[in-house]
Structures are given as C-alpha cells and as structure tokens.
Image (cartoon, rainbow, N blue to C red; front, side, top):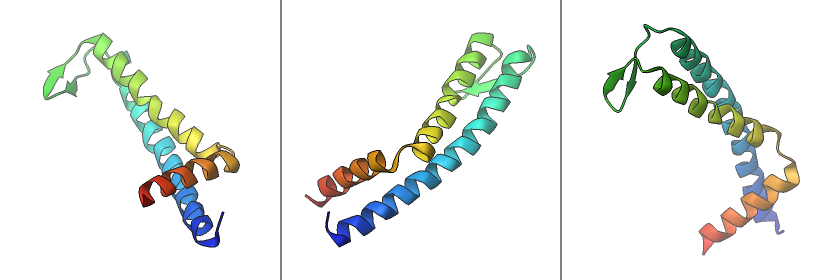
Length: 96
C-alpha cells in the first residue's frame, strides 16, 4: 500500500471508529426510549406520521433501533486489519 493510500485509509478507519462510538451512544438512547414506550401501554409513538399505541409496533421499533448499537460495536471494535482492507477497497473503487 502506498503512502497516500495509507493516509486515506487511516482517516477512513478513524472516522469509522468515531461513527461507531456515535452509533453506540445514539442507538443506546433510542433503545432505552423505545423499550420504555413498549412497556408503557399508554405511550404513543409516531410511525410514518401516524400516531400509534400498538404494542407490536413499539416492540419492532425497539428491536430495529437495537441494530444501531450493534453496528456501532462492530465499527468500534473490529480488528484494524479488517477495517484497513475494507477502507482500501472502498477508496480504490471510488478512485475509478
């Protein structure tokens, strides 16, 4: 890997780890809020502009928001070699 590509890869990997930390924080807040809403029968959430009290919709929102911290954990704690390969492939494809 040449020096210029290595610098770009390091930047992308660093930003990926920062994005992972952000996803962990934001996703954890979302999971907390939607779990509380799922446990409260009177709580109302908005889905596509429609207010709903449906418990299955609230549980689905909690489960789907759980994907954010999982993705964040992957980005934050993935091995450096894996992220380096991934970032190099993306950078090289974008350069074409």
